[in-house]
View (cartoon, rainbow, N blue to C red):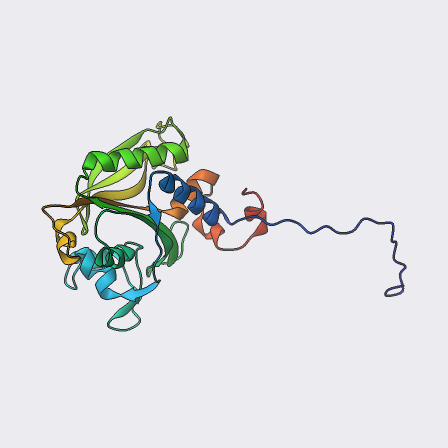
Length: 254
């Protein structure tokens, strides 16, 4: 007896519900698998880094206007919480000779207010390829192959001019809206296209600062937000759902 009640030993036991990976982990693994298949090496780096690695080596000195685009968590005058995984590039390029073909996943930190599409902590995956013969057509080929594998072979991709301090020229990459098929809806702002990632050819000034010969080597870089991919893949409309540990949401993702 227990608490005055008999135990019915013939009743089936309570099984343990199996868990599953978080959607951010699922999509990160999927993206990394795609790039590994194209010969990229996964490289990680510290979340607490120096201002030099996070900004200066990537052509963003103290007085650069691009600093205003990223509200940074500084720990002191030298150290900060990284605002982008591209800080890993500085470590790698300073310690390796070309060719370099890497992809860097991880958490990043910015002083953003929490809402349906922003968070002070989020995840990115950034890639870098530096070699003697590396062109914008290689960049387009890699990104079109990635987006085609992730969203499906029918995916239409569009490149448009943009600006990033560590790439020149730079391009914003969009796909035809996966919700409305390009007809226009609330998800794509009635434009028919969804911005997915940023990319461009490595700025020669970055090559100079890491000691690479700009006359011999060229490269391209790209970066994508994991939360953006997760929300599109699983139809999630509010980023906060990914961080609230609500089993009603997480149990639906396999």
